[in-house]
Amino acid sequence: MKRIIAICVASALMMGSALAQDAIKIGALYNLTGGMSSLDGPSLKGAQLAVKQINAGGGLLGKQIELIAPDGKTDQQETAKAAQRVLSEGVIAGIGQSDTTFVMAGAPLFQEKGIPFVTSGATHPELPQWVGNFMFMTPFGDDDQSFAIADYTFDKLKVKRVAVWTDNSMDFTKALSKFFIQRFKERGGEIVGEDAFMMGDTNFSAQIARLAALDPKPDAVFISAIPSEAGLSVKQIREQGIKIPIVSGDGFDTELVASVPGPELANDVYFSTHTYRGDDRPEVTKFIADYKAEYGIDPENAFAPLGYDALMLVADAVKRANSAEPAKIRDALAETKGFKAVTGEISYTRPSMVPPKPVAIVSVKGGKYAVEEIWKPKAQ
Image (tube, rainbow, N blue to C red):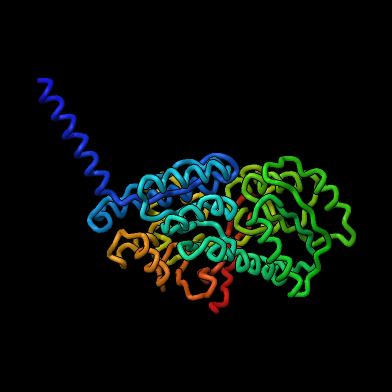
C-alpha cells in the first residue's frame, strides 16, 4: 500500500510538473496596494480578462496562459523583487505598470534576460531608449498627452495664464509638466508660477496659499500627479474657494478625482487620457460588455483596457512568431502594425517606438466624467 501511495504521489507530481511546463507563463508587474493601485488594479483585471478569453479559445500555441502577478506595493524595491520572481519562473514576456518610475524598477531586469516587456500604462516617451530593444509601449507618450491637454486648455478653455504643480518624485509627472509647459508656451500661453510636492503628500495648504497669492493670477492650474494626490489636490483647492479649471494628464484618470472631493467640489477638472470612453468602435463596446460580465462593473478607467491591450499585444506577437521563444516574440512585437487595440490602433512606426495614438480629453463636472474631444498626434 505504501508503494502504491508513493507511486500515486510521484505520478501526481510528474503530472503537475508536466502541466506547468505546458503552460505559457507571462509576468504581470502591478502595484495592487499603495498610491498606484487605482490604476494598476483595473489594469491587472483587464489583463486577467484577456487571459481568460484566450484560454477559453484554446490558449496560445495549444497551451494555456498562466499569468504571474505579484504585488509591487507602489514601492520600487518591491517591484524589482517582483520582477526577479516572475523571471525566475520562466516567463516568455512581461506586461504591466502604469508609471515610468516603476517600469524602470523592473523592465531593465527583463532586458538583461532578453525577455520582452510591454508596459500597459507608463507613458514617458524615452522608455524604449532607456530600457532597450526588448521594451515596448502600449500607450501614447507623455509628449502627446501633454500637448493634447495644453492645446485644449489654450483653445477650448481660452486660458492664457497657467500655474503648474509637479510631483517631483516621479519621472512620469516631471515629464508631463515639462511637455505641457513647452507646448503651452509654444501656443502663446504664459506660465505664471511653478510649485512642487512629493508622492505621499496629503496637505497642499502651502501650495494653495502660494497659488492664491500669484500675481498675475492664473486662469487655470495644471497638476501633474498620480491618483492618490489627484483627488486630494482637487478637494483641497476647491475647499479654499479657488474655482479656476484644474487640468492634468492620465494620472487624473481615476475615480478618486470624483470620490475624494465629492460631486459638489469635483468640478471644472479636465485631463488627457487614453481613448475608450465615449468611443463606439466594436473593440470598445465588446470590451466594456465583457468586463462588466466578468466583474459586475463598468471598467473603472482607461487603465483597465490598457491592461487588456498589453496582454493581447503579447498574444498577437506569439501567434505571428508562431513561437514562445522570447527573441522571436520581441521581433514580432517590433513589427506590429495596425493592431486593433481597445485604446486605439497600435503601430510601431516612429523611431522612438512610441505608438502614435489618439488622446481623449475628459472633463469632470459635478463628479461626472465625459469625453470632450479626441486629439490626434502626428504619425511622423
